[in-house]
Length: 275
Image (cartoon, rainbow, N blue to C red; front, side, top):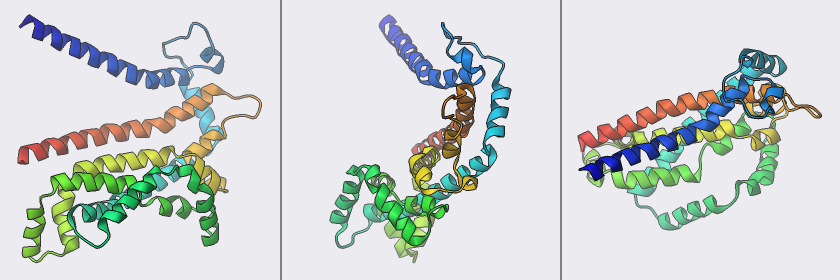
């Protein structure tokens, strides 16, 4: 009995230590955002909060079009996430629950595309966007990213285990077509997987810096990451201002994670109760 109690205490201690280690970078980011640049280089480092947060944020907003870039990132990330959820879920359930010629070879080809570094496609993608006349527009950010191999693979694996074939057959007997079965029967079951995929895609697009930097040539259309990069001076950089801008860019992702994690857990629990 005593041994079991000590194991529980040790487990909780390890979990608490892991939690503190994982949250410390965000805490340190917040601390640095509340101080002046000179204080950031101070030794020993000060772990308490300073008084310069509002001043640093004010300088960020006055230096770049922060709210415009924030709106651009929100539009691009939200659009890509919604399109990925729709197209990847369609392709994923098709690979999981339907038979068609060349299915296995197509899936192998899909997996092979995940092995290629994304940097290899930058030049061909830019050439294609230039041929379409999309350079400098949001279409070049949204359209190429509306389907990805990981999302299809993720939905396919989840659907294969969670969607009973008998449910699809029952829908067919009732006269439902593919989209009716997909919308009414499959999507409710796929909600946990879609919650994760949506958050994963949104965060990836929100944090993307290289492709928007290459494809956008109008400051009014800069995404937040590209706009924040202009805070770095050529000779002198106000790191307190840069860190404050970074903190503002991270906060929406923290809020999204908290919301999606609760939704994900509640969906998993609901599925367990129903089963």
